[in-house]
Image 1 (cartoon, helix red, strand yellow):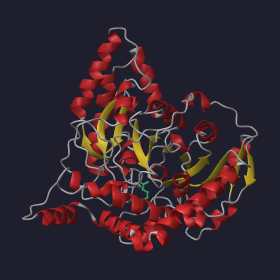
Image 2 (cartoon, rainbow, N blue to C red):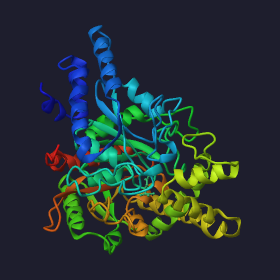
Image 3 (tube, protein in one colour):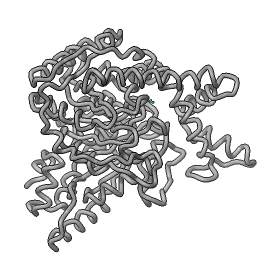
Image 4 (cartoon, protein in one colour):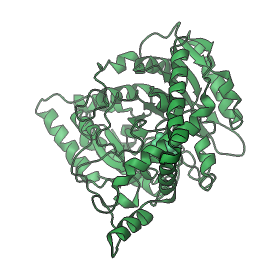
Amino acid sequence: MDHHAIRSLRARELAVLVQRGSVTAERVAAAFVERAEQTQTSCAAFQQLTAESALAAAREIDQRRRAGQPLGPLAGVPVGLKDNFVTRNITTTCGSRILSDWLPPYDSTHALRLRQADAVMIGKLAMDEFAMGSSNENTPFAAVRNPWALDHVPGGSSGGSAAAVAARGCALSLGSDTGGSIRQPASFCGLVGLKPTYGRVSRRGMIAFASSLDQAGPMTQDVRDAAIALGVLAGRDPDDATSLDAEVPDYVAACDRRVVGKKVGIDRATLDHDGLDPEVRRAFEASIDVLRGRGVEIVEVTLPHLDLGIPTYYALCMAESASNLARYDGVRYGWRAEADTLAQLYDQTRALGFGAEVKRRIMLGNFVLRAAQYREYYGQALRVRQLITRGYEQAFARCDAIASPTSPVPAFRLGERARDPVSMYLADIYTVGANLAGLPAISIPGGFSLARDRPPLPIGFQLVGARLEEPTLLAIAAAHEADTTWHLQSPPKGPA
Ligand code: GLN
């Protein structure tokens, strides 16, 4: 099988071939490393390639197979990890100068579980600094480009994770989602992105941004690959007190569940949003028709507080990040500025080590936490979070999932929004609700923008589920996928 044919396979197909010995894990790793290297000049998806250790790990998997040992569910599958998942003795930058040389002393639970499943890590993926952003432009490193149109952003903050899978530099990747960072880049790059229920997947070893909102999840080419990856990642982790002790269902089997009679809710008011691109709206209606065609019943619901999502999310994530990022002081971790006094050391390390967006959030976060206005801002945001959560609970009494676009617009041009943080924040309108309420949500390919003034760009369709209802989301998503071909398209070859 040639390299091109290998790269055209889904993660689960690769695993089956490797388990059977029809192709070696080493050959699979070589095929993806080749592509990852080629596309690095055009897309810059990887923060770092770990080609040598990948090939060594692949050879070790092949040896175990030859010795007759059973292999894991992701046998030989090349994976990439967003660079906020710590990896032992492999630099983990979190997209920041302040961690640019940091070698973690341990592996995140995600890296461990993927390895136990016999996946092969071929690199760490570029991201917005500390996962703050929606375009991957908040970084001191190279900006990632969207494989569908190289002058467009891949989305963020898991932009590298999206671009790498779309360009076939790896077969699946891990992202993190605090306010949409798995789903929005998945939608911009034509992929499936799944944010699990809060606590479904461990946070151990995923560098903290806003701890009450952060979740890790897979980014893949189709729904079944996301289901396999979730099965590997999910489950109680004694080292994360917020991880849930709930049984892990068979997510792959869930993809074959019948959806006839399932109810999907739409809040029509959320589609009256000013910034909603007409093509995204059209694609959304088409996806709803696809679900209807599968026997899904569409019902109207109201999410009374959708417009409050963005201010609530930003107040809370900034407050939590101000607290989480206090640990980067030049003493305990990573990069340290030259200084004569201790005060200067703190000051200069943080002034020069963090980029503008991170500093903006630390300052605003400390502002909303100040004793004088704590009640007015942070306290108020917590109360609104409760209202939003209750709004979802009421809606889920009437339906099994709630549909919306993932992002109001397709990928935008590099630089188009970079200088206007508020326009960047507003793009998160459809995604932050699931994080505030801790609910599972998935973005799946739902069409293409074919407007004359821009290149063909993927559009995402989002489904939000009730707590721990990942199986329901996967079933509905798989039904949608069965009647569409969006997930089968691949980006133009590009200069690579
Ligand atoms: N765009 C959002 C932000 O900038 C989401 C980030 C995320 O999910 N990590 O905060």
